[in-house]
Image (cartoon, rainbow, N blue to C red):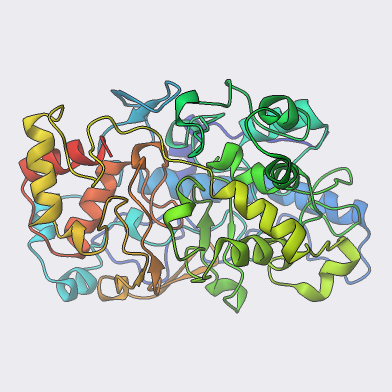
Length: 471
């Protein structure tokens, strides 16, 4: 078993006081971000002939400094308390309430929204929680799984997806419920077919033998079957204590949804420019035409094959063969996997009709929110149709609001074009935006109100949120 180091959130206030470093462009309008510009190595840098045992010892020694730095960043950006709504996800996990992004002293959301992007940029008053979120060890990158997924996968399959160099950073309350429900477009009558279990190699056949045809069962087998990955493989170039068979598609897209595992986008270089990527849900991929947050892959087959050939190895295909690259056959394997992925449905939305409009069950606040969604809030311009996506890419041009800076080794600037994700079932897919920088839907409403300069009132925001929660 790998060594897992837990850092208490209660220690962060002392850490923030004792850490004097901050962003390279930070100004007096913000409290200094308690994060240094450069990694805090605890031991001398590695040598070219470093053995696995030496590398593991070095990285384990460095881990506390990296995790303290990352958790201090989160604590400086967000209110991380557990504040729950009465509304829950399908299997009962409460949805988090309230805006969690912190503002500079003396600034309110209304006063900030009244300013131009240039004024916000010049004053350095763009909220830190709206800026890109780095990987805990950005110059290393790689897949990172939340502890509850690590524990259940280990218990069922014997695979340990814990890393000895870093661990997951966001608190559990801001993540999707685990394990999530599964809905099939072919068997709506069954409701949640997960039976409360995480689907793995060890139970997929028992759970689905009478719900999928043989071709689909083979596709599901491949989706839960582990393949070698950059950080989890059988050779010394890994970040697990013991050799591992690898990672399965459904280790990140658990039960065809997501456990909020993250890594770095594969097609950007140099390393410090790569964006953190939160795992998107696979629910509803049958109605989507673009796949990947920034890659604009044109079919679910392309996405499935790309993940196996490139994303699993951080785009470093020259190293993949030694680790155990296993190219999938397009006709007999990729197609079977894609067929299963297209069966994954959204959770029920009893207040929506077949066209994605509110029905007679909706409240007055939800109706006002729908009107805002289609009008003043301008959501409909991207999130259109019954599934609330235009299947396109859009650039929010965040570079209008802040100067480029380095945050925990990430060069933070504009994000570039980002896929329009469907909003169906949005309350079940926190955190939000492609890198998970927005912890709640309340944060998301404030983000778009500011970035799109919508001038929403407090009542508008409450009504819009009411609508989003029923989608």
